[in-house]
Length: 361
Image (cartoon, rainbow, N blue to C red; front, side):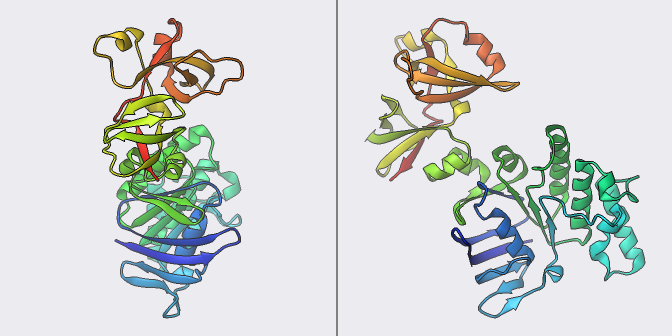
């Protein structure tokens, strides 16, 4: 199964201009609000017409501006799960699922509907209307409707955004199961970094209608090609930087020199490290005759917490004074926090050479 997209569409704020191809592995489309994520899905589904370009699904041309081809949405064999689910309020769950199956014989329509009810764990809800369902049940019903037509491509637009935390975890598990069994091209739109990582195999990062990065998710998270992609994938710490040697940089804003494992082949302007990759080490480690690389004293400027993590805003090299801005933002689990929070200051952080990211001009 393969989906090829090459489209351009002029929008009010920018031009949507994308070219990518994806196969049977789920592709997560990540980006901030207004980046063009939903518009991309709508163009693939046939709900919006690109100005120019070409869309091909399993060698079937769905759209080709040069040849004046624009296959109607209902004939594209594309299943779309809307952000608000868009169930028909006057139809029951079973009727919603069967809505796109009117061309099938009655027995086959009934069989497919029953199969989706069983697969999506909707037994006992067949005769209920959307207003009688919970958010999670509505989501499963909408997903069942999208899958009932045996689509060759499945498009999911922010499928978890309308759910509370408890339901989100349950439905995410359901989506993982569904995507694991699905053999078509699957695109999942989200602005949530963790959802994109958990649900997608590959990642397409959008910014202002352009592809800022595209490829395996591990590679993009580990080695984002630009500062913008690093920010969009959750990096909080950046510094102006310049190369001193092929494996050493001067981090101007952090006022230190750092060894990096990436070979510096061209001039760089910035470096960064993710908050969860900053490690706290025992102070005596930094004073041994063979010190750990990239270890520096630090002092807390402020903290904030969630149920399981602590975010620490840190000043490097010297104790902060009033209104001092922090140099780094670190995130640690509370178990780790308990190990050093009452220890003497300064604490010591390690900016691991393997975790540091460098960005060219």
